[in-house]
Length: 445
Image (cartoon, rainbow, N blue to C red; front, top):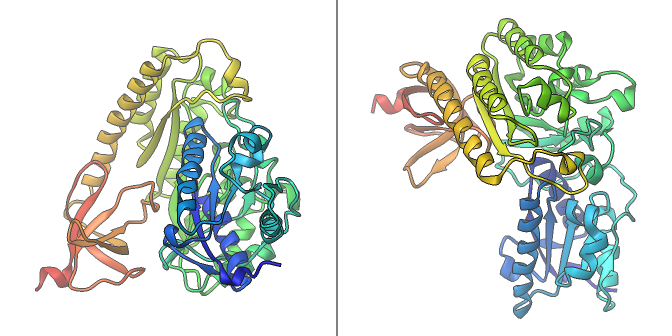
């Protein structure tokens, strides 16, 4: 048998925050075996690439990363492991073509990691995709800054949007038991901000408890003394009901922020996407949220250039943004993905048209976001410090209306600030994405 405690392991995690949690659990498997994990890829004898396969660009990035990593065989690298979404969906063609990899594992196979690796040292390339037992793991090696962490509460998806591969990669929606999630949250230690993620957070519990269970879970989660606040990402519009709105409004530990992936605003395109809801229903929900929770910050994502999208429907989406008044949005050009219903739809929009439309959407939202941020100039906002921006020579953090990595930041001067601490920052200026300011103690120096 191979003594893996004498080996150094390196990990590259690609894709979304949900993938990051999977990577963290794999790291815990490696650490629990007494093995060493290095941040220096050049020092790694066993290198793992946890992949994303959601879009063609993601698959291209994953394959290029694996090929780049294979170059380290000239140094200390002995084995290259490819795991996650790419092999889960494409192992049939990947095994024979991606010869740089020694071991393949799917999204549920991390428990078989050392067994597969041991077999690879016998001299054969190894395909362990689909051989895992899908056991829920609590232990993690958190890779985010020490003051915030993600908690993945479910896997898979039941929405079957016509443009999306997730159900064919991750399978149907599976909620993780409350007791295990609570234990995992407790194991994270003191966390200023715990961010709940799943493909659809708002659907939590329906498969497991036969009813919506997110509110029940939130009530239990927010009793934990080590969790200072909870942020919700990816709540689908048709699942946001009065009970959830009331919990967000009344629970002081829940950040007044929602990421609601709308994807489009026009009824015909929404129907083609197999999205539940209409333009009128979306606007009604946004209005209700703002009335019930006046300080609520709503973020969303939209796809432009879906097959058959007309110029009128595109302009309708631009008008929707102005009417909805969302704090921040991400916009994406439709990606034609094989093995999805939308792939075969007529009226595929030219690439140049899609890029032009996305650029225009960002321009429209930029003005909306700038107006929102400018309302804070001259006022004091509560900011969580994420660290120091050495290029700008100041501290950097976020207000409640910003999630890590996807939203804007607050750059501020202070006599002293600590990562994970909260500070009252007087906003002195802003652009369409970020704000700038200083704390009172800096002002008085």
